[in-house]
Length: 41
Length: 528
Image (cartoon, rainbow over all chains, first blue to last red; front, side, top):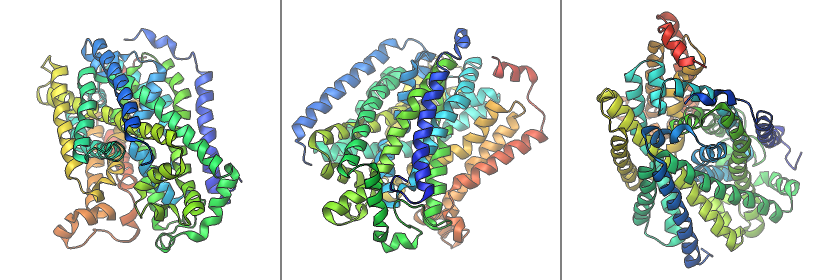
């Protein structure tokens, strides 16, 4: 896949993208969560 | 160097002016201790994400680890994966929100102070502060060297003078502007790094004929692996090293796990969770942090490995040969020969930004560790009202130590300084930090036992067993007449794999066998 034969390497390559996209989705879904704690300061 | 020095000089000058402007904003906005130590606990999520990422990724991470990928291949992408999942997602979502809340509950302004107050122990705060103050200059020294080498080679300035200039510039805005200045400048530097790395990736794939073609060309080069590396288990740049071979152990234990897990317990990173006002900011920061780290580590490791194809196409040699055997020179050599001049300038600026953003946070953390945690809270029992001034003095002191190290450290020790520091932090702090946040039953005795076990087991393994350091330090030979106390595979297993589990076990056992801490204190720590 992607010119790489060893599955351990192309898996790592793809997982890098998936995890970064996962971070973006997580951030977007929780965009307004956690606001209730604002008063503590 | 293909780029004209005056052009680069002018660009660097403009960059420095903007940095000083941001430092000045930090100075103006610093009115009380919390501003100086944790940026007033009111930092914007984007600033947090970029600052965290830019601090985490230093010049050595791009040039040093990118070069390692040039030599060892794309197996390093597992480290890139770890830095995104553990370094960003786990760190922000699980550790970050609890760290922030507990930091507010206990009015902690540094990482050692958070641990010290959670376990009601000035000793923990003082010991952690001293540990950071003693060992972080090693890490700062190597980052300083990376930055100064850049100034030396691109602006034609003498190396000793370059170290001096770089230190003065960074110290000036860190000492005066505190963490607000550090994080604002980090954010700018992070943005420059992001653009630089994005262009590097695109141009590399374009130059090598596309993603699949580039990888296929690298795969086809597996027969070119030098004998020395092949004997160590290297099977090609797009293949994992042979399972259990020395290269496999170095890749997995030192690089992937050492740095990938060590990131969780980095004091200069953990303190950043206490700079935002709510969990929402941490959630939003994950959106920026994930792609940012992908563009740093993912790109550096991919391009580092692919540089082999470029050098084979143009010079008929592999990357490590083109760089005269020095892995640290693979990335600079590749940039200089493969990239257009205008990009060389941008990338050099990105490297300077990477060095400065890491240095500024190191200076700030070392200063607060010595000035606030060790001196004020431990030695003076918190009585002095002059926290900021004492911290500034602590910073000046540790900065001087870092500069001395940058001048005197031999190359062989410096090369491992980042991994050594990350590993030591993981062993000493991670079990205690994890227990502090997630396990109410973890008590003071368990925390102290775990911290001491992690610290000394890690140092013991480093000095007497782990081949690379034990051989160059020579202490084992001096004391016991053998290069390393243990032999065989043990000598290539990183200290983190031995000391961190040991510290976790000690933390659990001692906590279970001794009385829990008072219930009212635990409730105060974990208050929502």
